[in-house]
Length: 277
Image 1 (cartoon, rainbow, N blue to C red):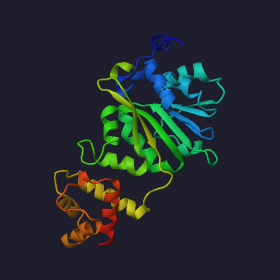
Image 2 (image 1 turned 60 degrees about the vertical axis):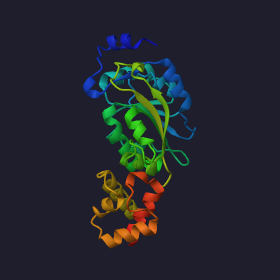
Image 3 (image 1 turned 45 degrees about the horizontal axis):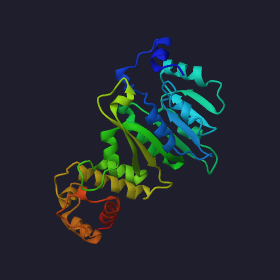
Image 4 (image 1 turned 120 degrees about the vertical axis):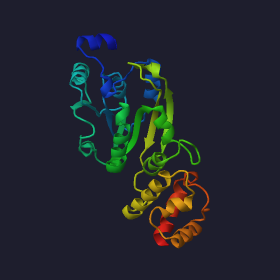
């Protein structure tokens, strides 16, 4: 394969800082990423942002059904040069936030496994879309993201990094940090380190739609006022004091602790107690 510099020169391509384009060039990191990604033979493997194809080349060894979505026209041309005639590789020029993921859904028991090295600015909207709109047919999501965000996704109750994002991930798809990736592994080099994560998507929701809405309202109330004790955070939902007291007692939660000390199961229990108080 041509070096990244030679390839970019050939296509008169210059990575755009405004688009968050940082390309992974560390072969050892790529080897480790290749080794941790799992894709059952019945799944479609979706690569988000093919870039110049360095990860694509490794992903195609893992499946006979690889779909690569890339929106940048020059990067797409590079992918066409390398993979247009490759068996089992389909290239799609599209914005991943607009792409109809359901169009890739294979026959049961197959699902979609996702992998990609994405711009940092895409992290929250992309993960949110995957988990809230497409969770029923996704199996696992492997992404390179900013290390700080990865730390928040895997954070435990009572820690500084623990917050609404941590609980959202735990609710829809428990997160695991697979490896830390230093900034020097990319070209151009970003100002922060990265991490490669796995999100194991739950096959079905933990709560019905009404209870889920109430649960996330409670989560927002808690983390919009982290310094407040739990009883005061819950009152911000507009609940009368006597209802709050009954719910806390029913859930076995002390009113004087902070909500950030509670894990997913206890917060779901408290949310249910509030709806029944």
